[in-house]
Length: 175
Image (cartoon, rainbow, N blue to C red):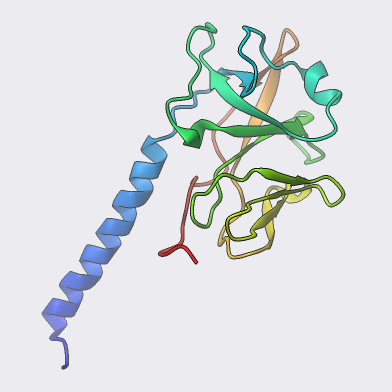
């Protein structure tokens, strides 16, 4: 059966609006703010991540952002999880934070290939090069892994800007 032009137009608008709404909802899930401190996810103490901590690590550190006053750990959504590491990317002040949410189906990017320096999503195999701004080097992810610039204040790492791109799953279905 052929679809009439008006019906096709309404359907296209509906799908387009739905896509914008779902991306807006994903963006609304992120509560990270410029000036936030960082705290290791596995740290129950009150210590914040320092530049020295990261320099002595052999890989990325999974963190939560913390309000600048240190009183509120922003762990109300998994979209706030960040991989923090040394950066060789020009203009990143030596440190960078990547989103821990895969750009394909919004799974947790939880694996690290230290030899190739790739963050890997175990759900569908997307791999991101941390030395190339989170560029997709394998798997179905359609976009690079977003990153945040970091700064250093009194040796503590802080969020120094906004994400390089939209966070979260961009697939219309999970493969």
